[in-house]
Length: 333
Image (cartoon, rainbow, N blue to C red; front, top):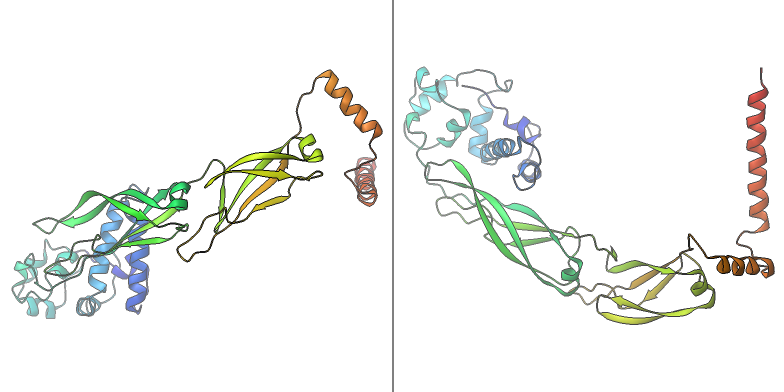
């Protein structure tokens, strides 16, 4: 028989508490779940994690497992005599046994050779989680989303296989990034009358071509030409709830945030975010000859400067210092 280190598989110490074991199992089960993992051995690792947890979560099974002693994973070994006495097995009975078979047969009350018989104890199904990506429009107004999952089930022989199913999930208005929706009884099937586990749908918000989400607030870049920023204007913009005329005051600078109250996302508690238009002044890359002459006339008559005198002098001094250092290095023998 090959020894399997269930503690090593779950990444916990041998004296780990039950909640530590459960927490580690859930983390690893999600990491290696076939619907999530990109690891080519993800499904195999998923089964190993589930096997380890099935033993260590049961106080009686864990006690018996610990009684086997500490060994190196993969090491050949034979169970101690007390195991043979308990199950009425001889040394030869263990020749083709896997350690997981040993614990599946635990406390059946029969001979060890009847290890595939059920212990008939009710066992609740496992909880699972799956990620789903939702458009921002659905987050804003609420709606439905189809989630396809493949959950492991046991066939008549007790062997695991994956069952594919598609569920329609209600997305609440104002759902947050990372929010978990609980679908009661949609997880792993229970055994011998145990209740079915739950399925947790973890929401992620799809990137939007216009808006960036920050909590309940929405942000977007408002592109202005130089003359719109200088002279001011009125621009018709689209929001998640409709169109609005946004007034741009004369002398608006790049980077200024223009707030539209109550135009962001809202949640079930009644809170409503804002929509922020972040001004970005766009300069034409190419201009016609008449346009260039007008810009030159503006430059000749304008007394405006975008840089303060102190900032200009500081930049000039820094440039001279850098040039001096380069010259010193070049002339040093």
